[in-house]
Image 1 (cartoon, helix red, strand yellow):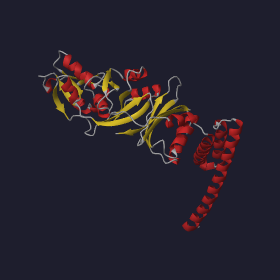
Image 2: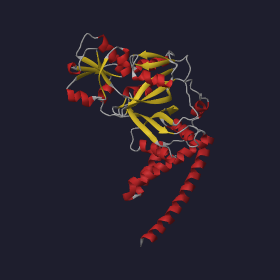
Image 3: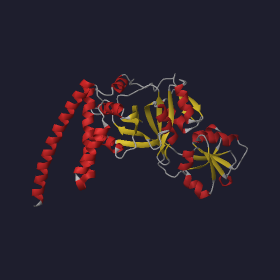
Image 4: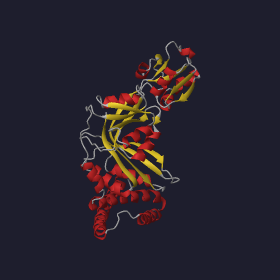
Length: 376
């Protein structure tokens, strides 16, 4: 059999597969109607597991591939049933009632920021809300608590850095509080090494800063053999260096912080990467979705079972949604179960997006829609 003949046979088989797939989806539609009439749940994990095991066994040496194929088919079948049964009504109502205009220019806003005056978070805050009033808190936990107590309308926190990676504590707090992300902003980070006036660069023996900043400048610290110690924030380290009586310490901070606390800039341009950028989130208890929102965040947990994450991700692929971030964090008190945080490009008004989110909200444990927002 030559290549053309093989391809003709494949085309014939493909036609049969499409026809059978269509028939199967019509059966799924009938199943959905039956479940609706009888008040039954859509997801039946025991039956699905039996189907997967049977497909794998019957496919012989192609068993693993058959299992993946059937898992995808059942995910699509389940999505159809969710759509027919109107799953995720609570989420639909929340999205439909979301505010679509964020008061960026308001002068009445109180904003919870991590750190002290001069911190990068403060700069991010003022970029987003130029007329707002930043209120500084010493820890990420305090920022989230301030929003919980309604001390601030919005909070601003760093979530990841292009060099040092994710700020895991913020991810954990996002998964704990489930606040909405209403906006995001990327800031180019240009650290300086600052010390009390009169201090010479060669006199510096120890450096203080936030853990992320120390990681971002680790190569320089290692090359100089400098001791270093973590501090609450870059600006708080600058504040401490200014108040200290020591003349052999320095802080890694912003030029704004050095100016704020009267420090002398000893060195610039020493971070590991010249393209050092930090992404900051604007969080709120209220849901805002701007009309041009282009990123969606959500979280959920999955059972500790082979293929469970793959099966979910194939739903995104089927709807043409591009994932831009996936982060996993241990789920407290469960041993080996995890909470997953996902970012993907999209708008909740897109024809496929809201139906998928509604289906997942009914199907997945610990599901939370965390926001649909614009990244500036």
